[in-house]
Image (tube, rainbow, N blue to C red; front, side):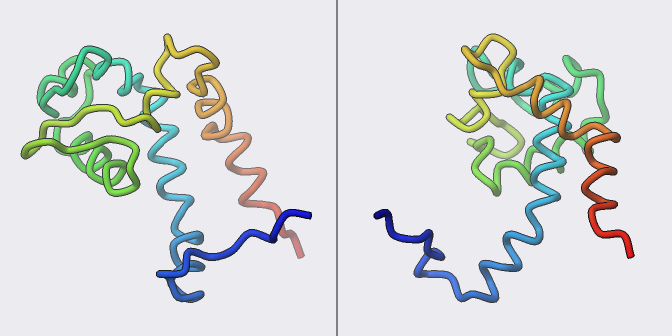
Length: 123
């Protein structure tokens, strides 16, 4: 029989729970990146946040904050200041990836799905 899942040994239980609880922010950021098609813009390599903002037609500083948040979770990598690229994690939600998770992320990040989890406990 398999051993039960364990916490990372370098994390205290408090840190592990706080990281899990904050995961909703990373999740929503991934859904926004998927909806905007951000991983597709890095398909041919690193790009500046300015270049990607123009391609995605979004506010540059807001996109920078999104990419920094996702880079902190390993979704993208920031090579130089404001120059990002895909990691294996963002590659799986590129539009042209075999079995792309982009449609799934867009669906579960949508308001209907999101609200259902927000209303999970009703007293």
